[in-house]
View (cartoon, rainbow, N blue to C red):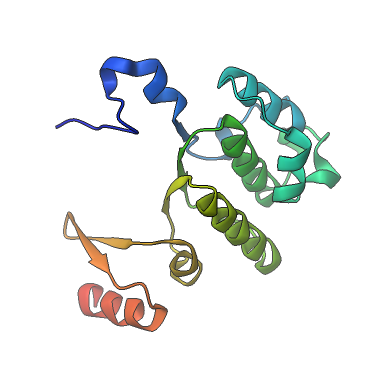
Length: 168
């Protein structure tokens, strides 16, 4: 098959890659750089002239923006990872378990960040075990059932019922 992203396919690799951003997890961050330096590096690499300070405030990392990533907790790294993705300027963002290691307050903050990105027209693909928060963010939810994708309802109580019908 072929994947087309914003009308670009693999033949237009540079434009295709500039519109897609994915770092698997916080281990992909530059551990010997600060949060600020990681964000700055990606914005330059993706040639996105963004307001880094605004991104820092959006994801709530102001108090540790100058801390080396290797000295951060996993929750702090998760938020830096999200800031880096935003700084890329990519229209299509992929996140794998972006709510891992976050406390309730930061889950709420990140959920609101994703909703802000969604309002800005960015497309977000995320995998998550946190179905409640995912149902607030996502337009569509799918489960992998016996090797096939099955679309689930968006309402949380219906998602629970769908889950138990397919996985019990």
